[in-house]
Amino acid sequence: MAPAAISEIKVGHIDDVQELKKSKTSQIPERFIRDRTERPNLDYSCTNIPVVDLSKLFQGSKDEFCSEILNLMTSCKEWGFFQVINHGIDLELLERIEKVAMEFFMMPLEEKQKYPMIPGTVQGYGQAFVFSEDQKLDWCNMFALGLEPHCVRNPKLWPTKPSDFCETVEIYSSEIRKLCKNLLKYIAITLSLNEDIFEEMFGVAVQAVRMNYYPACPRPDLVLGLSPHSDGSALTVLQQGKGSSIGLQILKDDKWIPVQPIPNALVINIGDTIEVLTNGRYKSVEHRAVTHKEKDRLSIVTFYAPSYEIELGPIPELVDDKNPCKYRRYNHGEYSKHYVTNKLQGKKTLEFAKINN
Ligand SMILES: COC(=O)C(/C=C/C1=C(C)CCCC1(C)C)=C/O[C@H]1C=C(C)C(=O)O1
Ligand SMILES: O=C(O)CCC(=O)C(=O)O
Ligand SMILES: [Fe+2]
Image (cartoon, rainbow, N blue to C red; front, top):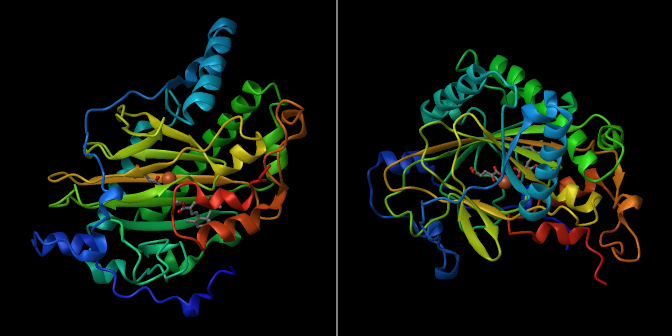
């Protein structure tokens, strides 16, 4: 079915979850209450996902490099999610981005609503991926911006307050961009591919940032902070706010596993695009966020993806008799459009590319 034109989308009233919290009501509006089967398990005792030490790849001995490449390979293959330590990004910059993000979310609603996320779009302040009045809502406020290339930017959505917001986002994004390029280089090595293959294929990569703020919720057992989904990107870099509650959960072997934040580490996950390019050798992993009764949570998420212009499909070296082609070729701009015009629903969006054989 063709996606609805933006003007046709009727999403009804969307409560701002920070305002709900301020009103001190213990009553959760019906639109946030999940069906029984979707309600979260609130296990905050965490499992450790793999940790990749990037200093061993940047400047380790030959042995350290080889063993960390192996670690990266297993992390991508078995988990699709890992944390990177010693990534080289100034820790003060990580603190600064959290500070401006929190200052933004703490502004009065009227100020934030100067940058509205129009239903059917994904940039600005509000709730993304809401397409109907009967769709359940996430217990989350989001603020998202397209960053690179500049043609994906909407300058009207870049806030004037806090005054150092835009400058901090620019510096942060350029550091995260370098990290993504490096990670893709190492991921190519784990696949025995030319280390520049992704960089050369991607053109001017699309990059976007999304800040997610999950206020404490009086009934975390009834709601979800963020619906289950896989990311449409090639790679996603996720920074969990210092002092935030635990909230990210990943689906592994049909179980939701909470991710234990490591101070100063960044969480990396494989997106749908790498799943397609690697012909399913590395898979994007379904994940979601849950809320907490007393503590709020902040996450800052960067999506890194190929240029909208590029046509992609499984890399020929990764297709053979034992690994027949599982995905068709398509244009990444079309996939992006498909992704942002459908609600978050596990890995359903990737059906766009799957060959059913
Ligand atoms: C959960 O995923 C997203 O919110 C998301 C959105 C990204 C985007 C913006 C916030 C603004 C600019 C466009 C873009 C779609 C990149 C995920 O991004 C993924 C999904 C696709 C497809 C992609 O390329 O990145
Ligand atoms: O907040 C989180 O931990 C998850 C965020 C996320 O998955 C996303 O923004 O795509
Ligand atoms: Fe995500």
